Amino acid sequence: MLTMISGEVAPNGANAQAAEPREPSEAELLDAYSRALIGAVERVGPAVVHLEVEIARSVRGRQRGSGGGSGSGFFFTPDGFLLTNSHVVHGAQAIRATFGDGGTHSAHLVGDDPDTDLAVLKVDQSAPAFATLGDSSALRAGQLVVAIGNPLGFQATVTAGVVSALGRTMRSESGRLIEGVVQTDAALNPGNSGGPLASSRGDVVGVNTAIIAGAQGICFAIPSRTAEFVASRLMRDGRVRRAYIGVSGQTIRLTRRQADRYHLAAPGAVLVTSVEAGSPASRAGIIARDLIVSVGGVPVTTVDDLHRRLNEDAIGVSLTIALFHGGTRRELKVTPTERS
Image (tube, rainbow, N blue to C red):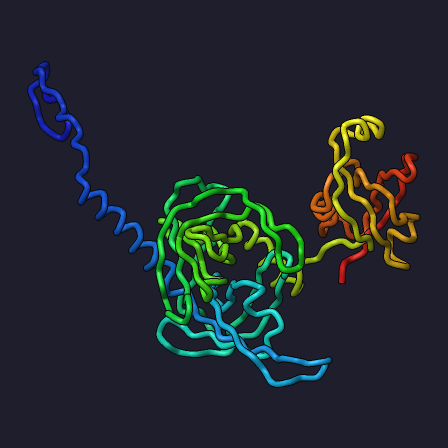
């Protein structure tokens, strides 16, 4: 009778032992690293395009010529839909997409969402290749990632790095908070905006969007889960629907004594600074100087908390807003409308 041990045949009962595993050499590790990068680039690279954008310039409401900009984008469907950044194409009069083979094609804007700095474009022909959106929630700090784009006009540029941190937040140009942002040290430069950040498996885990000027290796990407959600809404409606109640406010920090006085679990609230006439908040009786502390039974301690509550699901739904005015607690029913 024979027993298989480490791929070798040894007599039954023999005192044969498997050879101890050998540590891979530095050269072997570097080769494996290179193969991972090459594989990711070969899967994602053909889907990346260079975007050239023409934007009208106006002075006092009158058009005064046009300007231009550029960025990156990538196909994420086989029928010609592209993802990029809102700030790359917002207000564009004309958009040209240059494919990897050098061919240039017109693209039109399907919809953009400045609140998440994402936009969807459409080219009226099949994509030469398309990238798969991966699961950004599965990312881990230290994981290898690859950025592909067109920095400073150098097309199809590849940079590599790691996921530096997860769960970052940043402000969009509209002022709204973008959550779950991926920080990476894969080098990004002007022109990389809108390009893919891919895992070593070739799945897109982020849309490259921003850098910190003057810093080294501090770059950011919108997570793919956010991109997938926003892209589906832009393709369906041309916009991302959000609720509106018509208040402007600011975050204020309360002292522990004030929080105890108002019976609040956290020492924060939203101070209403103004209310638009005829808005849902105005009709409900909310006025300036009110302190909003909860919406729909969920505590609100910052303006960002209020934004989170005013999502698509809140449109047309009667919400109970708890607030304080002059030290008196009130609960008002407000029905948000869709933000224009």
